[in-house]
Amino acid sequence: MQVGNVTFITSRKGGDKPEIFHQCGKGLLAERLQSLMANRGFQATIEGGRDPGLESLAASMTGVAPEEVIELRLNTGMTSDDYRQIGHCLEALREQGILLICLDQKEQGASEINHQPHDAYIRNLIQQWEHEQLWRQAMSEGSLAGRRARRGQDVPVADPTLCVLNTAFSLGGLKAPQRVFGFALNEDSHSLAGYGWMQ
Image (tube, rainbow, N blue to C red):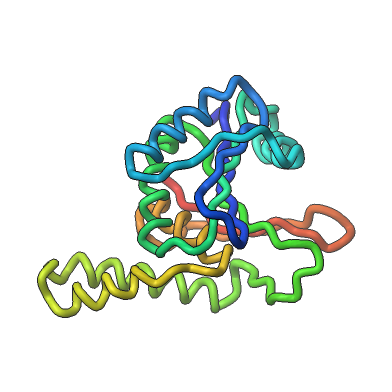
């Protein structure tokens, strides 16, 4: 399958709303994403490219230079349900053959634990989300369990990694990923690893 356009979904602490960065191409994909998000009540601004490395990363992953590369940078502080709604919004792009990559970029010198995809912590978290989703579907909207589940969805998310994971989980059809991958990028032990949701 030839990939013509790539959308990166990233997150960083702070910010008051999602931002769309147009990395290369005509900008039609950025405008389409802005319109899709506005239809779901999310106001996102379009800015010029801020990270030329994303265009190079997209080219190295797909084997050819994509026609258009954009980045959707999520802000922290929204609820889990908000990030999952954004994921549902992005499904329209996925159905049009656009490669969507949720990229959890760690800041230089970050002291926090860098969980790899094979770590039990992240895999158990996604499995828990999947079970909670099945539970919500099984219970009626008016039930006590349904109200408790909704209250849990109203808590603001402060961790950029969880913002990206919630969005990816929604893009993956609210199911656990089918693939786990990882490979070394350079001699400085920088690596790229993650999950794949297949359709």
